[in-house]
Length: 280
Image 1: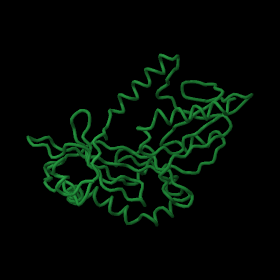
Image 2: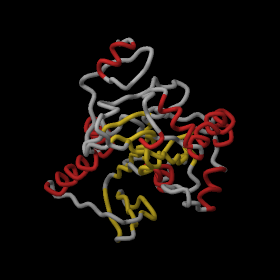
Image 3: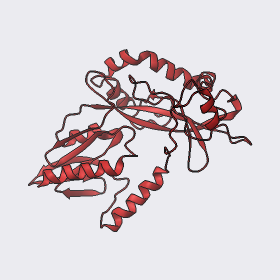
Image 4: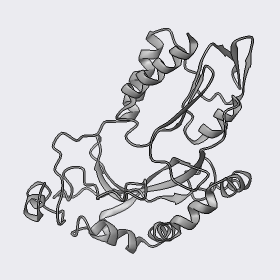
């Protein structure tokens, strides 16, 4: 545990009342991790089909028939980790849609590089136990960039990576999902605050300055955005734990929140063991 002086020793430009210093905490380039795993799959005789949309998953004669845009795939077991489409893919096998997936767009900003680095390491706020998002944080990346954010605003398309991505049929499905109205009533203040920081750059800067007071308006520039697949229960609760369920020999990863990337290998071993037990 660090006090204000200890914080400044490790992060000269950061401010806070207390902090937990974790010298072993680090990040990786997960894109490269995924590429390495794909190489391992190929070396083991596996095949990866990209840009292949799944349209149907049907059990017949003890085998799953998976209809894709690249042709039919047959398998004794199916493991789906479909992210933003997890509820839809699970429903194809007869599993319930709940928990439903609500997409939240997260906008990042980048810290301009200067002669004196304002951020040395990872700076995270104390998490809100009633809200599953991390809040704005400072993340030095493997390429030397520092990302700030993200915020969390409702996306009006399942893959709504841009503000202009609005698909009315998908938006209607999101807004009418069981639990959405209850979630909106519960978190409307947070939603207004998050949206305000998107449209009002000064509000974003004030939030960032709570942790790094020396930040100036010219220090931040727009960065990329992502979409979080947030599982929401029928009661309107944002699910903040892992959710897996099975339909025979089909296992569905319905929710895999942070730190799923960190835990991916251990989580994969658990999923495979569970699936092989079902196959027999």
